[in-house]
Image (cartoon, rainbow, N blue to C red; front, top):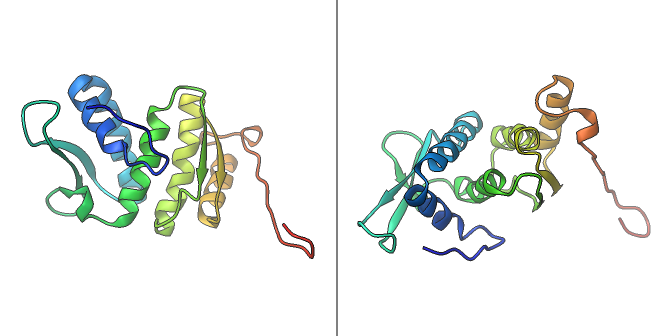
Length: 171
């Protein structure tokens, strides 16, 4: 399986399937980090890859457990399929790499938006990645502010917030 990176995240299922096949230890670490985010955000309880054959070129499903038995990714809430590429890219990017994101909170409920702020702080602290994020989410911003206040993952010098507003000439 080869992947061509796509800004919309369409390559992420292939990344997950390839990781499960080629590096079980790395897959387990990634799977646990995704599970932890899923539980804390209220989006899902677990994630796995179900291989539908015996070779790397055979089909597979990304299976998400929300309530009850696991379901195919395409059958769960839209927010899960939208945030999964964001989370996977954050956890698989090279250490220290900068990632640019435009409204990663879209299609997430408020609890998940807030938890995304904590998750991004975790990635900054543990992986030393940097982010430039354009967001309209007060929940995400407030969580980052609260995490700084509470000494979780981020320090004030780790964050720069630019607030843009319209005036008579533009933004």
